[in-house]
Amino acid sequence: MLKVQELTKSFGEIKALDAVTFSIDPGEVVGLLGANGAGKTTIIRSICSLLDCDSGEIYFENKNIRNSSKYLKHVGAVLEGSRNVHWRLTALQNAKYFTTIHGGKWKDCKEVAHKLVNSLGLDEYQNLDVGKMSTGNRQKAALVSALAHQPRLLLLDEPTLGLDVATVEKMREFIFEQATNKNNCLLVTSHDLQFIGRVCSRVIVIDRGAVIYDGGMDEFRNRLHKYELVLESESELAADELEFLKKAISENSAVTKYADNKFVAQYSDPTTGMEITAEASRLRIKPTSLELREQSLEKSYVQLIGDHS
Image (cartoon, rainbow, N blue to C red; front, side, top):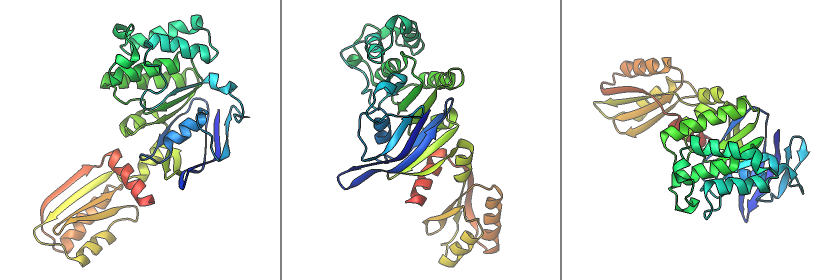
């Protein structure tokens, strides 16, 4: 449904996008990950025709979108900071306005908009201008505006920003409904990796404007360090002892010395922890504390970006 091919964009001497290429099929929910300034929002804005790239092409249903805006009636977007709503209108007024400019008929979309308002808990604020709402409720209003005309391609830029736990769960259910029952495709950016892990079957990781990973969510998890072992010894760890400990683990693992008598190991294979402790015992390193814990997806992701950089 969507194909981005060799998309490149520079702002002065800063290259925001560097030949970015990917595609999304109907029914797919794809997470777009990257640090602040990595290029995520630039990609979203390019797909929405809010930004002209220096080179590259974007295709929607196999048709080049260059010099054409007809495809936009099939696109819904929630932009970071609720920038896709008018703050002097109510949530339903916004939904009606954006439905109309997308070429839809309000009478056909009114029921969907009201259903969204009720399910997101905006019914008690339906007469309140968006600008007078809380950050979370503004985000909900942005969702209603983006979804009321029932688009086939959904671009969600930080959709959980400011939302409470219950609303995030409703968001997750809605995304599954859109992908599974309506065969739409969704591109979701978020710093909430737990949310991405629950809703996306595939992730694209952007770093400094370039794609460094594009694959399944399970494979993505497997590439990251799943476990973390913290060992603190009675005495200072010598440099050669640390090197021996590093050799005891696989190439896909990492050992970091945090203090003279403390090191942290990150790895994916659970047997690696036993190999490290066995090596520490052989070196007669007497631990005063030993802690094994499952490493968070967020911390693993930060390490992936750091390793690439």
